[in-house]
Image (spheres, helix red, strand yellow):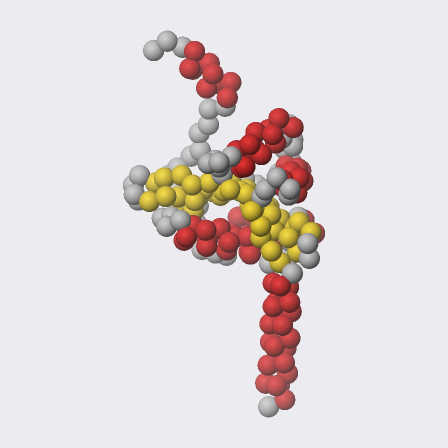
Length: 183
């Protein structure tokens, strides 16, 4: 009897902690006044990925694309107690074989010191909710093959690696070169 009482007390305490944490947790759309927080997150993401941070002009283009009348993508900042802890950027593509939109998750990032505390899960579930609202048939994203922690994170939600598909890319230089050629 005492053991059951202790378990119930422990569960109630944990639920209260979660409720309190959720009260201090917000996800807000990026706007001109908090864009600097997104820039900070992207720079930290680049460091995590062992890549160079985008150049200032790339951030200017991103800001323009996000804040346009018809935005090219959506970005959100996750804050805890008023301080940024994570971000997510996504856009809507279209899956012709499904006949439905696809939410393409471009970036989901949580500060290193805030990982394994539910912030990433909260951001991912936010994306799932957005996909549902937009009547998407699926959510797609990329993960670096060497990033086993991130792969494991997504697998917890039931995500599966897309088989038989490879990612191909034309960079801007190649696009320009091809477009100059006469057909």
